[in-house]
Structure formats: structure tokens, C-alpha cells
Image (cartoon, rainbow, N blue to C red; front, side, top):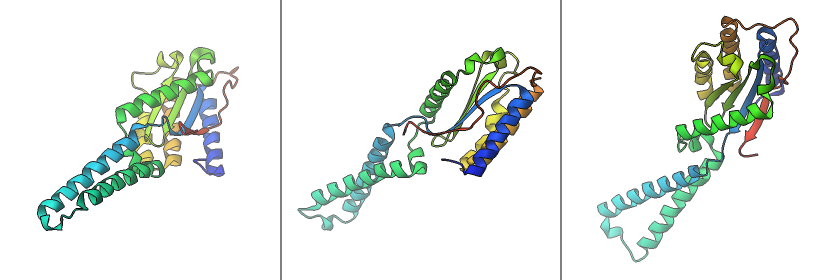
Length: 218
């Protein structure tokens, strides 16, 4: 969906390698958007109406001789048309929709989506409670890492922030494949430095296949 077959296969191999070397159970997911964000088109519509209204106001002040009995009707049509076009663009142009996305709300929705993945895949049931969720939101261009208690007890405070920092630049350039590769490498290094390694009797408990979803649009 978001990766070619070859890219998805390479990422799945990389996830398996990380789990094998660290013993950690990882659920990695790439989601189109973590919420429908119904306020986005309305914000775009309001911005379009405000902008076109100001333009027409200045035009009227500069050229009052252009006024006619039909000016009010024409201006109203123009204002509504601009607002509607700007609202519709948010449905087909993610970059435009992102202009009206509140980052705090996006972070909250991503956190909730990561928690739902945590429960859906029984990450809490892993041996030693060392499972985690790595969630990438494409519309949000944000990363959330949700860890279980066994990881929290051994990782330094903010230890996995380096993973997010490694992924963010490529994610902003819309290079999601490189972002995932860099993130998995940074995560493996962070876990290795914290002393995580595969136990001799360790067995795989969670499928390491990369999850790709449209998210709230499904």
C-alpha cells in the first residue's frame, strides 16, 4: 500500500533481525491517518472565505466604480466557491490538509491509535513484558513509540527519543522507506546498548510483518 513489494519485504526482514538480536517483540505500523479530523475541511473553508472576502473588500475600496447591482451576488458566489475549493483540496492533497492540522491533537490521536494496536496484538502478553509498538502517521508526519513495562524498567528516560529523531527528517521529506530503515537501526542500537539480547529459549510471539493501513479512512 505505502511500500513496494520489495520495500515491504526488506522492512519485514529488518524487523525480524531486530527481534532476533534483541529479544524484543515489535509491532511496526504505518498508517495513512490516525483520525478523520473533521475540523480540517471546515478550517480550510473558513480560511478560504476569509481570504477571498478580504481580497474583494480591498478591490471594492480601490475600484468602487466597479460596483453594480449584481456585485453582492457575484462576490458571495466567489467567496463560497473559494472556500469550497479549499475544503475539497484537503480530501485529495495531504500536504494541504496538513496545513490545517493541529499538531497537539494529532499527537493525541496517534497515541490512542498506538494504544489500540498495543491491545489488538496483545503486546502486553509478551514474555518479560518487553513488547513495543512503533507507529508512523503519514498525514501527521509524526512517530509514536509505545513500550511495555519490561522495557520501561530497563531503558533510560527518553531512551527511544533517538529513534524518533532519526526518522523525522526523512518522514518530513515523505521518504517513508528510509525513515523506517533508519528508525529500526536506531531502535536496535538503543536496545542493544540497554542490554537487550535474544535469550536461548526465546520464541517469536508476535508476527513481525509490517502493518500498513489507511487508518481512520478505512
